[in-house]
Image 1 (cartoon, rainbow, N blue to C red):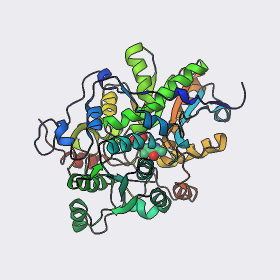
Image 2 (image 1 turned 45 degrees about the horizontal axis):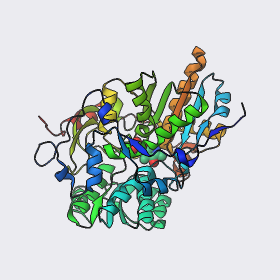
Image 3 (image 1 turned 90 degrees about the horizontal axis):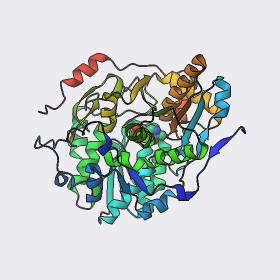
Image 4 (image 1 turned 60 degrees about the vertical axis):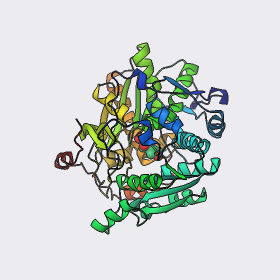
Length: 453
Ligand SMILES: *Cc1c(COP(=O)(O)O)cnc(C)c1O
């Protein structure tokens, strides 16, 4: 075999349907609760902020959902994404394992996020909406939605977590380059933002706060809907193009992964890659292992509780059963690796609880060590989020070296790190501290969880 193995499928291999895992879950998901009534949320509850097509997808029990042709047309800009075999990394590690990665960094925004941004913009446009509001942490989701808005002719307003707004000016510029408006959150434009600033004028913000602001704006304006970049069922659904393409590429190569790995913030890129392989395990008996990787600084799956909680700090979103660090969680400022959301997609949380997905947490210096090892072997610079998956893939490959196991490892390369070089700078300067989120803080957060019968 040559030094380079790269499988690029023809564009006719772009999937024609998304895979919905809900009907295949080991048990039905716990109902989502309306925070005002305390009762299961209905489609009508969600109508002020989402178009009906997405509400239906959110609750659908159909296993496959057709991808509208205009969305597939946009996907053709960068899909199918390549699947690489990391032969130089294998050689560097001296492992008998075969390491593969699905490279989502080829989208215009540099990550997997446009896979759902494009679909969400399309359905909102079809529903007669002219404006979308959203939040963004590091700026990846805000830039993906700005891109999608520009492709479908929608205005986009982005509430960007203040610390990132200050520390990541280039992603802010990307958002503006695609024609969207971006304001630092907490802002003075919403009740939610003003309430936080009244308590703490120096608040550096959090995803939970920015979500409250974006949801409030969508709920109050007739022309505006809300778009979320992760966590919800319909978002994970749209990301399954990643895994469906990967399944086809493995068929092409006559190989199959023994382990499927991904980093998790809200769970969307990992679910996107893993769920089609999970279907093969649940329905067709494939014995694949699954590993979800998160930071020690925001250890939602490994230290959080599996309980009902709000999706945002302002308690405006529906209450979901998921792994959570509490909706009051504010990530430590010293953490540079992204993946800072307090909650986790309900389906992914349930799969972890059922033991079908293993969860693992790493410290940030080890994560950046892995990122640099990878870049020096394979060339691509991973986003800090992606580097969590790289670290786990390297660990699995080294474990295989000890046992002599010739296994196939697949991980999702969720995005490139070209706009994250400030985090790399901090790493090279030795300024990154490893930080474990303290157990007491999880205990304290439990006191603020909503009581759901
Ligand atoms: C947003 C993002 C993530 C984390 O979000 P998920 O919903 O868990 O996928 C991971 N990697 C990259 C590159 C991202 O932009």
